[in-house]
Length: 449
Image (cartoon, rainbow, N blue to C red):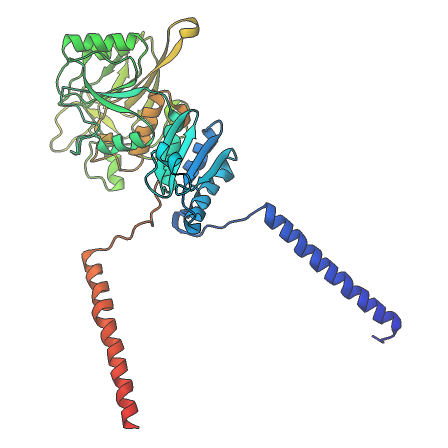
């Protein structure tokens, strides 16, 4: 191209336009960057982002949440708190975070019971939780407890060899009990022979009693149900009390025998008395539940004709299963009085109690297997999630269904004894010897020069 005055002006104008466009683009990027942010989380299990369970919990919490962080002027501490709360604020904009320096406001910190730097005081609808340097699991569980609210208790009946909500034996329910407390359930054990069922009982739990109840206990249970109380009943096929009076009150029957499911052998389960459940009803407590669940030695259940309860079969075994009424020895097959599958091993019962403004929906969950929620089996597949859903639904806490905050898998490094020995030997012996040997070699070479 021939250069002349015209082309020179053209090139100058082109350069000016180019620089104006570049500055304009940079200005737009800076403006967008100040008002919007984009983040990428490449950690295992995305542990620097909120889990789907925490996000769903925040969407179900109505109304503002106030968080006061009692943190000193340490910038690293405050930044850590801001990053954590910021993840929650992106989902729920009405979470308010306020910083208070306990060194400058000691009286306010003492009034709140703050003892450690980095303590969060969380308030929601007049209720309060306090945490110190929490992670997502602790903070989300605290929000779940605040959202649940109320002063009602979940009462576990004792006195007949029942599974204990805080017992550590394989038979007991300590793992489930700890998770229930994390979600805000107030747990209490009570012997019905010694006292009446408290008026603030939101949910009564009967977990595999080994002996039949006294008449006074049956009367108290009957009064509780007739008054509209909610119930979770875990029963088993053998060795437990069948509570015929309770069966009559619920209009149902615990069938004899044990459910046998040969299909579980395809999953590496050698015991045929462990039944598998894969499908769930599209309504009720398991409407959005999609996990496999295992039930060791389950009893079949059936509703009686004319029952006043609205019954939904919750848990049904596979078609290959059956209810074995004979002895479980040698080769076991479907014959005689056995009932072919699928077998119902869990029901959700509902009915309306009261009239007018006092009318309420009463809920009962019955499962023909208590082992699925025990310490020995609750960690298998979706058993813990299933148990939490059943308790939340029976306790009329529908907003908490399918909410369980899980820990990230990479927060701890677990090493075997052999791995610890190898690492220690390399860093404490091999590596220093290699460095020492290298130094000696260099020293000798220099001396020969």
